[in-house]
Length: 311
Image (cartoon, rainbow, N blue to C red; front, side, top):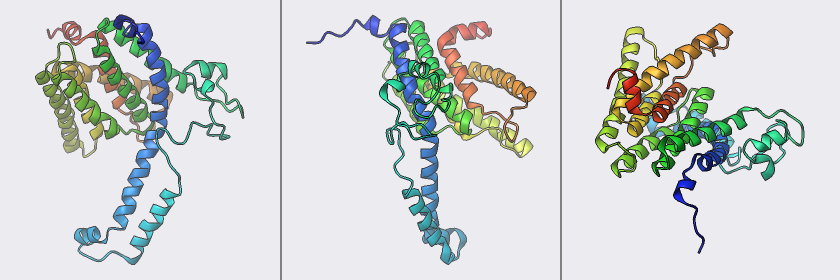
C-alpha cells in the first residue's frame, strides 16, 4: 500500500505553492480560451434567434423578413466551420507559427525561462504574463497555506483564489466577469459554509454575505444610473462580491469594497496620467474586488475590522 505524505506536508506553503504553479498554468488556458468560447456561444444564440420565426412574430407582431432565417443558417454554418474550441482542444500552439507546445516547454515558469520568452520554432516573443500568472498563483497558494497553518480548508480557499485570479485577468482583458465562474464560486462558498468546512464561518454569515454583497453593488448601480443615466458597473461585479461574501462573511463586504475602491482609484489615476485608459475612460472593477477579497482572506476579517476601528 502506498503511504501518503503527512497532511502537514501536503498543506505546507511549499507544497501548495508548487500546486499553485501548476494550477496557474491551467488558469492561463482558462484566461485565454474562455472568452472566445463564450463569444462563440453568444453568436450561436444569435443564430438560433435569427432562425426562430415564432419568437420574431411574438416580439414584433409581424412575420420575419425572408432573409432572416437564411442569415441565421449561414451564421450557424460559419460557427460550425471554426472547429472545436474548449479548455482541452485544440492543444496549445504558438499563435504565430502553429508550433505545438511540447510538455517540457509548458513547465510552469521554468519552461518560459528556458525558452528565454520566445517560441522554440519561430522565435516570436511569448508574453511574460504567462509565467507571471503562474508565479502569482503559486505565491498566493503558499500565502493561503501559511495563513491557515495546515488546516484542510486551505485547499478550499486555494480554489477560491484560483477562481479570483482567472476572473481578474478575464475582466481586465474583456470587462466581462463570466457567470460560469462567478456563480459556481458563490454556490461553492455557501455549500462549504453549510458543511462546516470553512473555519469560523457559519451558513448564516455566508448567506448574509452573499446577499449583502449582491445588494450593495446592485443598489449603487441603480442609484448611479437613475442620477446620471449611465451604467457605472456591470452585473458581474454584483455576483463577484456576492461570491466573496459567501466565502468571507457579511462583515467582509465593506472592507472589500473600500479596499477595491481605493486601489481602483489609484490605478485609474495612474493610467490616466500615463494616457493608457481604454476607450470610454474606465477600468474594470472586478480585479480590484478580487484583490480586496484576497487581502481580507490573507489578513483575516477580524484584524481588518480592528484596523478599521469597527471591532
